Amino acid sequence: MKEQNTKERILDSAEYLFASKGLKETSVRDITSHADVHLAAVNYHFQTKDGLLKALMDRRIVPLNRQRLELLDNYEKQFGQGSVPIEYALHALLAPGIRMCFEEPHFLSITGQIVSHPDVETYTIFVTNFEKVFSRFKDILIVSLPDITEEDLMWRIHFLTGSMIHTWTNHKGLSSLSKGVCELKEEDELVNKLIAFCAAGLRAEEYSHPQEHNE
Image 1 (cartoon, rainbow, N blue to C red):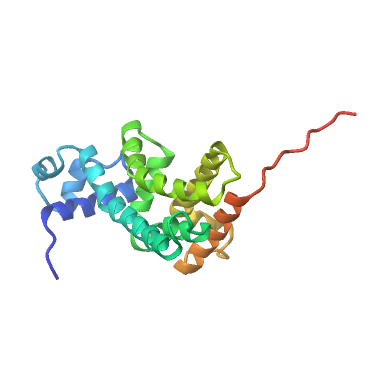
Image 2: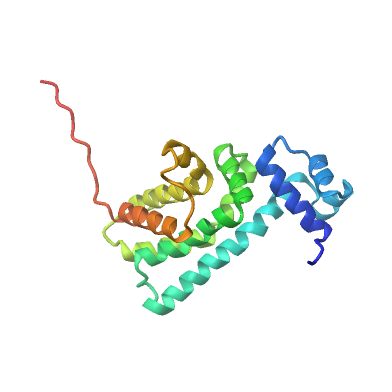
């Protein structure tokens, strides 16, 4: 087995400790001690703790987004540009992220912390990583849902993103609430359930709550 270099050991230790102990609660010294490297190694490779967190996000999010865009490219070749069905576009967006639930659970725990307790700079860096994917996905939905205003489409994408991130970060909570009925066991099954839910939400008719009348 190839021995990890110093930078990889630091990233692995940071990911584990950020997930298990917390972003704010984990010190640089905690990370270097866990990685068994000198404190100066963090300064050399990442400059600061924030620089380390950014490198950690890049390590996971860059390949995640590459997979998403490659899937979108393949579906556009299959169906034609501007003709990708919603379910296929959702598969490109959602499936690589759900795979991370199985393969990189520590990073998704960190994602939950960033989203739930956002530090302005950290959250901005996190969100910026998804701008290209968001733009491509939005362009597909504008064509697929021509009767929906841009404002409503943006809200629906917002709700869709919330469903995706909540599934990433809180699936263990569902297991507890459902008393084990819902478990994160089968990747494809979970992807299909999430696609079905999100596709229905994107296509939903406008709803107006009936006004209550006092007699």
